[in-house]
Amino acid sequence: MFKKRFKTPGEFKAAFKTRRRKVCRFCEEKVRVIGFYNDRVLRRFVNERGKIVARRVSGNCAFHQRRLTTAIKRARHLAIMPFTSEYYR
Amino acid sequence: MRTYESTFILSPQADDAAFDQQIKAITDLIGNNDGKIIKEDRWGIRRMAYPIKKFTQGFYTRLVFEGNSKLLTELERFYKLEDPYIRYLTIIFEGDPHEKIFDDADSDSNRAPHAKPTEDRERPAPARATTESRKPDNIAPVAIVEKPSTETAVSEPDGKDEPEKTEE
Ligand SMILES: [Zn+2]
Image 1 (cartoon, rainbow over the protein chains, first blue to last red):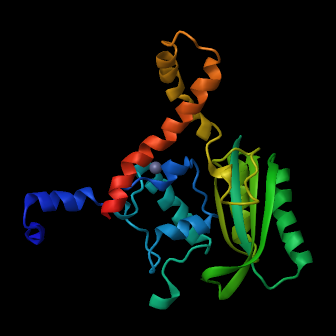
Image 2 (tube, chains in turn purple, yellow; image 1 turned 60 degrees about the vertical axis):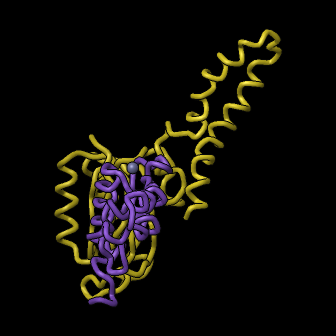
Image 3 (tube, helix red, strand yellow; image 1 turned 30 degrees about the vertical axis):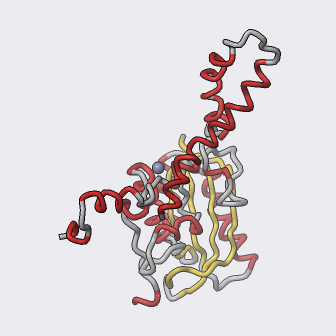
């Protein structure tokens, strides 16, 4: 179905080749501990509704996604982060 | 003994003296139960992401302390009993307690102490040294080796990225 958008297999391949390689931003920065109090960082990994962005979208590695999820949930408990955005409530 | 951190939100309907007294109640409780306060950080009154007990703001305080499990149960019991503590969270402290962590959340405090950028750049140096040492006149090997190694470490990934960027 999706392949129909590309006329040749080469075009299909090229579309994927040009896509930017995703790297875990926490690995890049060599972050070990993701603090729940650090809402400026946490907010980058939730969508407008306040939902945690999937790993395949954000490009985080499994280790850091797990840590990030814990941090966001802790932040929500302390009302540092919203469970859901005010707008959608 | 383990290192824990406890963050709590105080009801905003109080003055500074009351906040002081309510925070002191917690630090005293920790001290009286063989605990030791390592760090106390008052964030002050902050807007909350959603209302808790009909309050839209709260006074945040974060404590890092050493203690045993008995202290934790006492602490939990105290939070539950006393009204001004509208929300609390006690977790195992993961950072280095002697590191400066509260001033700027974005600073290198969250980074691993061994993770220095220079470490990565030192690795290609020995490989370069062997190629360089083939030359008979090696006057200052250290000075010559150090510079190109850092250059290659930086420029190589850049060179690979460039064609990708132009395609986009
Ligand atoms: Zn990672």
